[in-house]
Length: 223
Image (cartoon, rainbow, N blue to C red; front, side, top):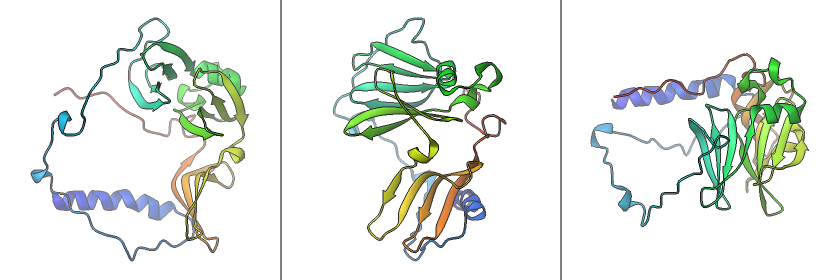
C-alpha cells in the first residue's frame, strides 16, 4: 500500500513537470511524507469541535439544490455552488434564502447565447474576493468575470487581464493565478522567480467546458 501511494503521487506530479514552462524549482528542502493507511486513526467530532449547530436552509421553489460542489461561509452567509442546477445560491446566517445566480443569468449578463452553450461552458463555480474590505462573489465566464455582492446584485464586470491576482513572496517570487499569455492555454497558477523565469502549473484550455474536456464528478457509489 505504501508503494502504491508513493507511485500514485509520482504519477500526479508528472503532468506538472510535462506541461510546465521553462523555469526551475528549488527542491533541495523537499521532505518525504510516508503514509500508512493501516495505522490511520479516526476521531469523533467532539475531538475537534466544542459545539455543532444545525442550520436548516429555507426550502422553496427557487432555493432547491441537489449536489453541493462548493460551500463557503462569507460574512455569516452561506454561498453554494450546486452542480445539479448549475447555480450559485446565497443563504443568510439563519438559513433564509437570499437569491440564486443561474447559468442563464450569467450567460445573459455576459452576452452569451444560453441556448447554444453547454451549461459548463457558461461558468464553473465561484471565488470570493476582498475588495476595499468588502467580500464579493466572482463568477468567471468565457467573456470575463462578473462580480456580485452578497445579495446577488451585479457590482462590476472585469476582463481576465484585470482579474489576475498576484501573491508576492519575500524573496521576490510572485505567484499569479489564472495565468495565460494567449487565453487559449491557461494555467491555474504560475510561479515567477525573482529573475523573471515563469513556470506554469495545472494547464487547461479556456474552451474545456465548451468541448466537454473536463471531469467534475460522477454517480455516487452506494455501499
